[in-house]
Image 1: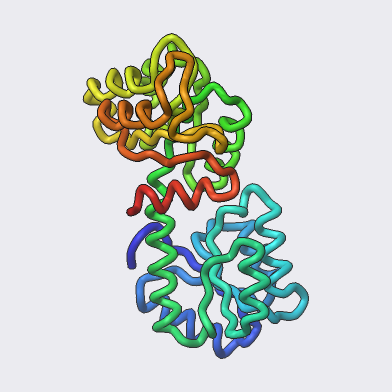
Image 2 (image 1 turned 90 degrees about the horizontal axis):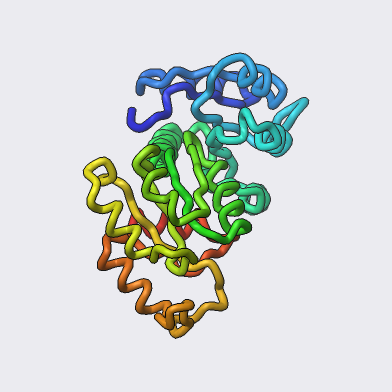
Amino acid sequence: MKGKIKRILLAEDDRVTSFLIKKQLEQNGYVVMTAANGLEALNIIGSMPVDLLVTDVVMPEMDGVDLYLALKDNPLTAKIPIIIATDKQMFQDSFMSLGVNHFVPKMSDVELLLAKIEEVSNVVEKSRLFRKVLICGTNKDVNAQMQAALLQKEDCLTTVVSSPLDIVSKALLMVPHLLLIDVMMEGDIMTNEMLGAMRCFARLKNTIFVTYVTSADAGLDAEDKGGRSLEVRIAECRAAGATHHLGHFNQMTFLNDLQNMIEG
């Protein structure tokens, strides 16, 4: 058993299937609870911690769709990872439109289910990369959009700094796992100068420094107030110790872009 997932809830109305899967998952080290429908699943989740929900779609009283929506509508349960058991493309398409990424064709295929649980567990483990994030930028709208997106990730603590003068001191106090900073941040201190200063501190040796550009309209030849182009600023930040460059901020793809960039 790998990663953070230990306690699994199975929502399946077929008692024999539920019993057999429970036993096999328990043999692989998981703690398994069962529910015969969505309402039972909600009651269990409300009374004890659950690391992962594996749910059928068609169930009496409350189906998998309504169960998913109820969980995502509650901030206390919205972060629970979910695997949907269905071989129907129509159901998969519907859940994908809601944000579900993890499916198994049928719950009774335990080998596939174990592989998917391990995959989800690894995703949960990787998400810990973002558990302390410092957002640095003078664009308040972008700061708020980044913070809102990152708050959806498990164990994520985000702090926003809009004054260049406060960035180094805040970083030393927080010791973030990830620091996001605008390449063209406006102020008396340039972004590359702040990066260079932070790279001098041993406390921040494991921090991932990611630069980004606020405006999608800013081309590489766009200049700051000092006449330096965006391309030059990016290169200066890399030389000063930036780990990655995210590119232009896009609210719709921000989290995926960030995850893919760092994992790659």
